[in-house]
Image (tube, rainbow over all chains, first blue to last red; front, side, top):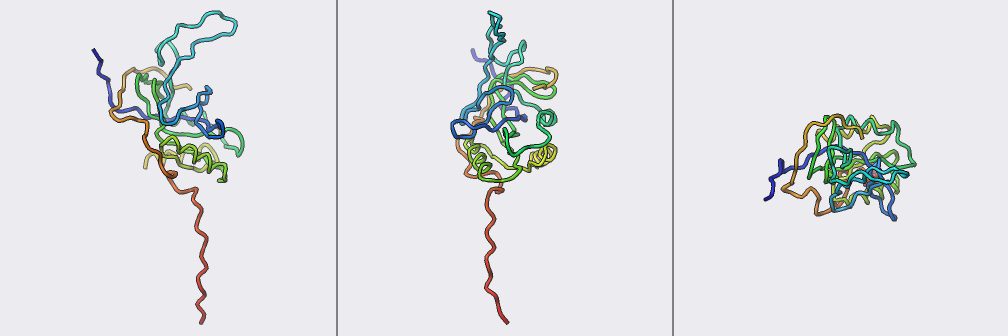
Length: 170
Length: 46
């Protein structure tokens, strides 16, 4: 017997990624874990378990997300995302990418966000401090996710969030 | 990421696949497109 789902439309939240180089191609990477987000396939949450190097046991493996754990693919509201952005973007270093993300499967809702078992980017915003060939290549690579990618002003996090919020509300 | 306090849990099975099947051909906007060079208009002399 199959159990009917509660909903048939994905939840859409906000996320922060880093645009990282992977074998010469830009990919989205989670900020807190070095998880590369696949192109043209959902990211499926896996709990890495509770590991301490000198402790011989691991917490029991479970499906992600689980109520007893903080695992799962996270998304949040825009105010929460803003708190994790650097105030000023630099021309060098990891490039943060803000975007909307679709969440589905098993979803745990919180008052400022969600944890889910399945996720895929829905729309990406790339802060550009100074447009050059490198940033153009990054945007071109991110288009391989098959979702809209938009360059936004990258002078500061506040300016970026303001622009992204206006675009999302339009 | 700190997302506050748990509210509820549910399951979602999207009718439409959230993973797009085709790739956008160009960025959402055109900030990367080079502006066309201004073309010189032939001067119209008196």
